[in-house]
Amino acid sequence: MIWPQRIYLRQGWYHHGVLSDFLGDGILTVDGEQWRHQRKAASYQFSTKMLRDYSNSAFKSNAVKLAEIVSGAAISNNVIEMQVRCYLVQLQYTKQKCKTFPLYPLLAYWQELFMESTLDSVCKVILGVDLDTVRGTYKEGAEFFNAFDEASAALMYRYFNVLWRIMRFFNIGSEAVLRKSLRVTDEFVYKLIRNKIEQAQQLQDNLPVSTNTKIMNYLLFLVVFCIGLVLICWQPEYLTGDERRLVVKVYRIERN
Amino acid sequence: MKGDLLSRFIELKETDPKYLRDISLSFILAGKDTTAITLSWFLYELCKNSHVQEKVAQEIRETTNIAAGSSIDELAARVTQENLEKMQYLYASLNETLRLHPAVPVVISYITSLT
Image (cartoon, rainbow over all chains, first blue to last red; front, side, top):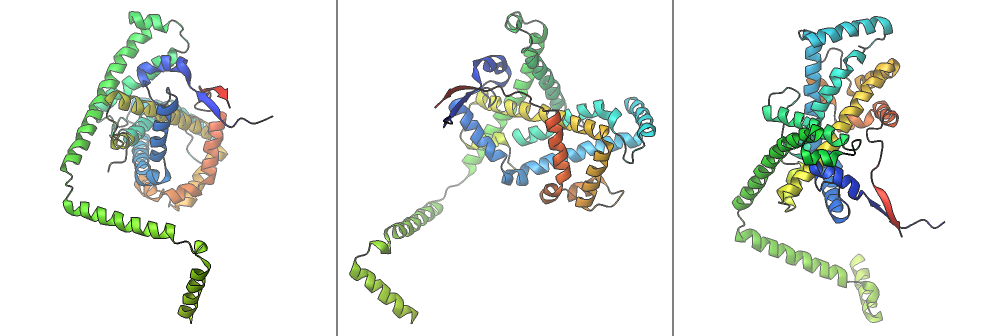
């Protein structure tokens, strides 16, 4: 069998139809040139250099926050929810007799914390904003978290609910929730984008391009161009016999 | 410091707010739930297999060379890229979690043509 040289993959119109209300023309729903464009920029974002310089610190600071919350809750025991869980932990502890602290009863609590923590990390890496939903100090961030969760749940429900287009038309049930949540997430993200673009433009306006740097750039270009020209044209293999002999002679004289 | 994906796209002269929104929301959706669910499953598996839990904790203690009773910040300072690369058992157990409980169990793209 001849192995095909190229396999054309598509995400297709079906998923685009279901997901486009929320994700629009994002990387999960588009094909072809747009997909390649986003993929290329994203691969730079997740390169080793960027991970080391930027993303790692974002992930780490959020992990520290998470650890502080958990250890704080474990020490103080003042929340009723935590008390119940700690009782369960003790039960588990006597049953299992393992050395490290058993985590099992805390899992439901952890999943919620993980959801908040990963949203914080991802938002820092993608949008460049610190939502701090783990601690809940930023009100808009907490609203965004809730709206985002509801929207993605309603979106996934569409895959099991064949009548979703009708429900969307009449704006009832999960579709009504989705529409409301989308308004919140959109507003939040659009505001951020507007700020970012304005910042970028201001930065561009303030950047002075002096004639000095222009001349320097031109000179640099000339030098690089000349060196390139010499490197390309200077190929001793293509010299005529006499010239080659001359080069060899000069070379020997210089060596002696 | 500017290093987020949104700034990157704006640097690339992409100024359509709708398109930028689509990109950022897609990446947030792709990064958030998958990571959180995998981490939850990881903890679940650690609870079920306490010997693995013990080994993971032991490996972290050894690689970071941290004394008992140290604070979280001390530990965080020791967790560097180089140290993370040394934690092979942790890496393997995370991979095993992904094998047992894949966060994205289906690939939605399909083949349209072969040439």
